[in-house]
Length: 318
Ligand SMILES: *[C@@H]1O[C@H](CO)[C@@H](O)[C@H](O)[C@H]1NC(C)=O
Ligand SMILES: *[C@@H]1O[C@H](CO)[C@@H](O)[C@H](O)[C@H]1NC(C)=O
Ligand SMILES: *[C@@H]1O[C@H](CO)[C@@H](O)[C@H](O)[C@H]1NC(C)=O
Ligand SMILES: *[C@@H]1O[C@H](CO)[C@@H](O)[C@H](O)[C@H]1NC(C)=O
Image (cartoon, rainbow, N blue to C red; front, side):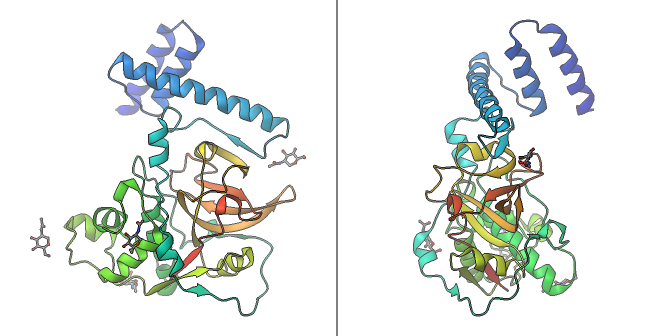
């Protein structure tokens, strides 16, 4: 039903607009990303945001085609967002006091580390989620890594844990305004556990009966890329990075940014590493849906903790 009406609208829009090319493109954009703006003021404000972003993406990509950038960008749901909205969806708020008090894993002996790792083929890896407008990357990272390790321990399928419960009930973080996966794990430990997604949906109550222990402690991987690679032999590594404007529009290739050596603002899972065209990268899982990046994943340059990705790498202990 929805699809039929969208198609009809598309035909109507295409046949009735014969003005500037950008009007046409804007109408197509709104249909593609299901944007509806009730009044002309809002429509024109959003259109201007979209237009300047579209031009910036085109300029970036033509440089990328000349070999001046190692990744390309593309239009997406964020294209007509305001600066404020774009900050909010990143969703990670660094908690330095908690992190400095965390136990670290000491590197004892180095087993043979494979040349590449890619956990996307591992059935215990939780599929890419989508935080939507909620700045919930921190909760998705906290829950998805627990799901992975409990799947491994239990030799069974992944049982989805409630991200919603974390976002609703974890008062040490800020819900859709952001938070820290480390603080969230600490909250789950203090709280006596977390509910499965299905159980929480049925209860919808922060003083719930469905809690089950899912984490005992957590450890920081001291920031060396070697430690992260070793940890990836066991499973995903929870991390955070500074994602600037371009990161939101990443499409494919190896992401790099000369201006991202700043406090992290996006929580991600590191799920592998490899080499493309002689350049080493980390493979990360993000939570902006499969239409973002390479089906929801991205490659980030593996070099001197690009965007501080290696700096706050943690694993849960179940
Ligand atoms: C292991 O899997 C079973 C069946 O899916 C489930 O009932 C049980 O709660 C799981 N145990 C843990 C520790 O996750
Ligand atoms: C950091 O985490 C601690 C413990 O969970 C919490 O009490 C504190 O408010 C957090 N700080 C920030 C800046 O969120
Ligand atoms: C929430 O849970 C508490 C204790 O389990 C219960 O007494 C209360 O009625 C529940 N509230 C709702 C709205 O379900
Ligand atoms: C790798 O390099 C070759 C030649 O330099 C280029 O044609 C190709 O597009 C590059 N691949 C990627 C994924 O960047």
